[in-house]
Amino acid sequence: MTKSALISLIAQQLKLSRKDAETAVNTVFDSIGHSLEVGNRVELRGFGSFGLKERRSREGRNPKTGERVMVDAKRVLFFKAGKALRERVDH
Image 1 (cartoon, rainbow, N blue to C red):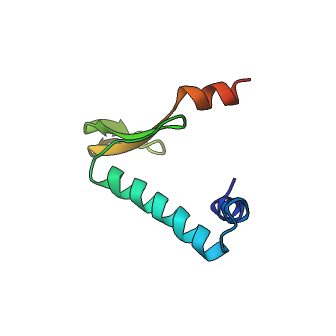
Image 2: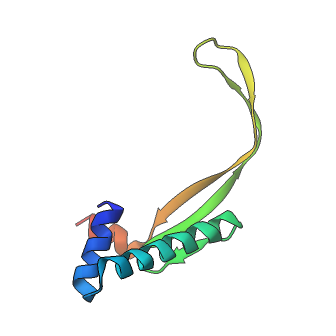
Image 3: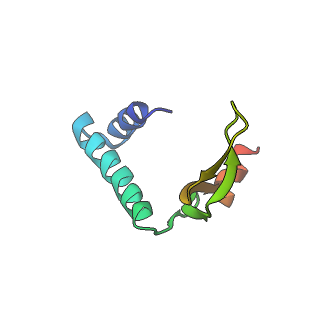
């Protein structure tokens, strides 16, 4: 499902204008993004949780040349599906 399809579905189901549904979807996505940006975990009961994992700096290799390079430390986003979602998908 695309963001546009989600907006259309919400507009249809809740009898909202497409613009109002788009505002709602953007507000939810912006809120999730902001929470993750400041380092908070986001949990949506029955759906799943978004979080960040800290990766230390390490030595890697350039795949083309085989040359050793330093990979900087970074934060990596992850999603873990909730039990209800896993059960719905695995039927």
